[in-house]
Structures are given as C-alpha cells and as structure tokens.
Length: 87
Image 1 (spheres, helix red, strand yellow):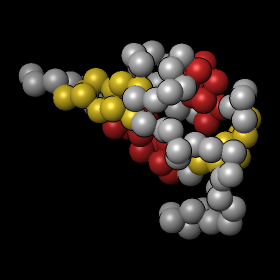
Image 2: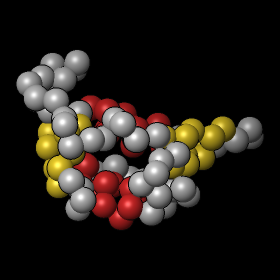
Image 3: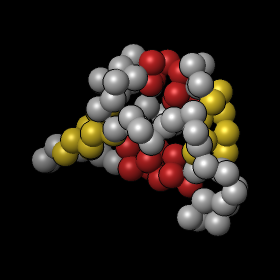
C-alpha cells in the first residue's frame, strides 16, 4: 500500500487573536488554554483531522515552530489525537 504524508502547519492559524462569533460550519468557536496561550478552534475541524489521521496508510507530521509544544500543549487542549506525530 502506498503511504501518504500529511503535514500540518498551525503557525499563524493558532494565535492569541482568535476569532469570535460563529465558525464557517455555523457553530460557536471553542476556546482553550494551550499552556502558552489561549487558542480558538472549530471543533468540526479537529474532528475532521482526527478522522483523516486515522486513515490507513496516512502519515501525519507536524510542520510548525511549536515543535514538541504542539503535542504537549495544543493536542490535549483542543482534543487533537496527534500526540505521537513526528515534528
């Protein structure tokens, strides 16, 4: 089976100046403390990433200056099952 890599970049997307109101999915933005800063995120996006990451043959990799802070702080804060992804 062919292996495919997905690189996830959160730099500039996760920032302390998060949106307010409703997401493009029509739900409220969620806010969480990611250890270093408060982040806003769409639960639908996190749920979709978790489903994609579970696909057979897919290798997910962090592409971020967060480095080891992404799996340590960001993942538990927003519920992203990416704690074992390489960075």
